Image (cartoon, rainbow, N blue to C red; front, top):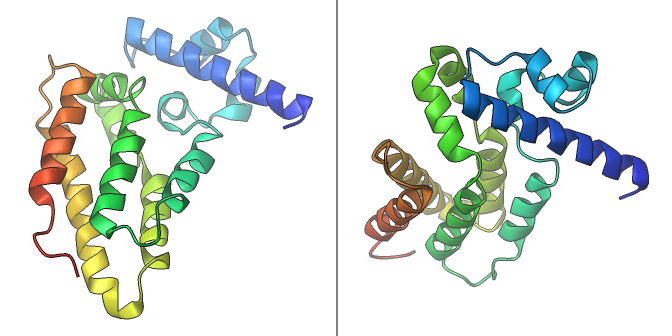
Length: 189
């Protein structure tokens, strides 16, 4: 990464950090793009060079994050059972959301507008995961692979939906691990 790219990444992260701090302090509705830009020491126009909206400042993945999760997928051993690989990848991805997920959840509860926007959170990750699953399965294994992927995604949703508001993020991770253990296929084709 050259100097210009490093500066852009540093600015992106400064804006993200300012947004997260202000949104955590003031809430979604009380926080403006102008406040976020000022806290990050950038102009409003610069804010919009990096993020499409204040929601995006909390929801968009870090520019290096996609490469990290793709690397995690491709580093799984080819002979590893799909369920074991999915469990490791999904647990790792969720662990990486430690700083954002609790705030995102709180903002969703406080603001219907944010909740509506947040529905698409994780789309790129899930698309990459589906592509990765299909890349390591044959057409004849596609049914089983798709079923395992969908069950694993349901495990994440279940862990998230049953995560009490007063429970720490580690509690969510424990719920996720429990859901993935309970959903594990008894027979792996």
